[in-house]
Structures are given as structure tokens and as C-alpha cells.
Length: 373
Image (cartoon, rainbow, N blue to C red; front, side, top):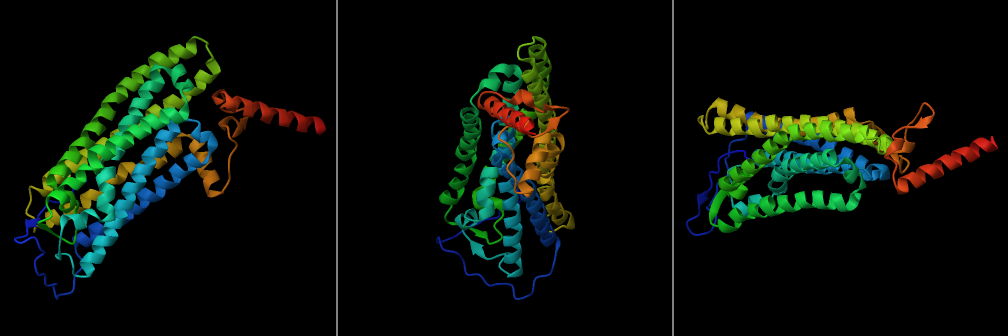
């Protein structure tokens, strides 16, 4: 996450210079307002995404569907990012009102801040997960029958585990190069992200984020083409048409959700961040316009805040899982048992393998109870 230009200087003898705090009390300014916005946006982002991830992982039936594993992984990344924003707002406000904003510290001190640690990972993990979700949609739409037969845990382990490995190997670990290589540099206690891991890494992470976001948007037309070409043809063949019809409906909802989410990420995370970075380097740092641009950074999380509303609004399974979470309920281990409609079980076509056995047992118990009546 890029915020501000790194103004760190080199220490002459490897020790921090003598620092005298400002005796004048701090007055509320635009930076304080920006940090309060950090706290509000971060809290909302984490408070919306974390319960959604827990609701998915808590229900056994949801864990049987690969699509919702992808949503939960994305939600966990966004939750961690929101926690970073909230922590940054709290820590920096405490630093400012304690008159320690200009206190000299090392880059490693800034790197050990919770928010800089989280951002060094989430800055890449969120867009990478979005790209992995796009790849998952391509696989689901191109080979719907094979996709349905994939073992969920192994498939999810490869997809989500691969995304996690890439984000750690190409973002989190490289973030420590700057603080280890610049132990003699002196930053300030406000600990902007560039003070922790340098301008070069910030630009690199932003480019990585942009490439993943652009790629996910570019893959969306491919997903739509495969959906209408492969899924419709598969249903038309009549091979297990009931199950494929359910997969078609689920794939359609996930495709629409993925397209909206990818476009929102491109607008708010990539374009807005790029324009904001360019604007802040083009105006004087002591101008009112520069300080006003500080309020741009919390706006880049609007896509992560909108995702829970998008997924919960479009997916009945998500709404039922969220209600069950807040009511402390555990739903049946098969989504086909969740919502009886017009004398038949809704989502019955999703029951396969062990789920089909559970459904049979459920029906048998219903028949026995009706006979006893």
C-alpha cells in the first residue's frame, strides 16, 4: 500500500539523533481527520468481511462448495487489511497527540508495526486472490462436470494455498529487504508504509496489485464466453441435467459477482491509488490540497466493503449462513436440506456422494415420522 514519499535520512554514525519533542500542544488538522477515516473504514471492512468468512467456514454444507471457499479466502484477506487500517489510525493518532510524530526511529521499528506487517501481505494477497477466483471461474465454466468431481479440499488447497504462497514469497518476504538493508537510515515515529519498506517496494507492490486486478478484469469476458458455450451445452446434453442446472445457476451468480468485484477493485484500488499517488507527488507538501489528498487513501477500500453486500445479496446460501451465524445455529450438512420449496428440496441437485446419502437418510426419517402420525 503506497501512502507517502519516504523522507528517511541516513544516520551519520549508525545511532539515532538526539530528538527534542515539540513543546506546543498538537492542534487537530486534516491528517487527524484522515487517520480517523482510516479507523472507521478499517473497522467497517473487518466487521463486514470477517463474519462472512466465519459464516462460510462454520457450515459443513458451505465447505462442500468450492466457490464459497474462494469467497471466504478473499474475505479473510480483506479482514486483515481492514485490521491494518484500523491499527494504523489508532497508533498514528496516539503518536501524534503524544507529540512524538517526528521522533527518530529505524525502518525496522516501523516494519514491526502491526499495520505495516499486515499491509506488506494484504497489499498483494487480496488482488492475487481475486485473480485466483477468476481462474477458478474459468475452470468451473470450461469443464463443469470435471469441476464438480474435483475433491474439494485438495482443489482448494492447491488454489488458495498457491495464492498464499505467492503473496508471501513475492510480497511479504521482500518487504523485509529494505529495513534489513538500511539499518542506518532514520525515519520518524509516524511510520508511514514507505518508511518501513521503502519507495521501491511500494511501487513494486502497487504494480503487482495493478497487474492482478487488470488480469482479473481481462479474464471476465473469457469466463462469460465459457459459461454460455460450455455450461449451456452441457445442460442441453441431458447428462445429469438437474445437477448441471444447479451448477449453471451457481456459476452464473458467481460470474456476475466476480465481474462486479473485479471492476470495483480496478476502479477503487488501482485507478484511484494511481491517481492519488500522482497527485500527491505533483503538489507542494505544505499545501492544503496535499493534506486534503490524504483522505483519498481510505476510499480505496470501498470495493472490499461492498463485497459482503454483493455476495450476501446475490446468494441465498450466504444469507442463510449469516443468519445461522448470528443465531448461533448449525445448519444441516447439505444445502439441499436448508430450504424446502413446493414439496421438493431446494438445491437437491447439489447433493452428490456422501451428501446424497445424507439426503436419503433425511427423507427416510421424514417418511417414518409421517407413518407414525
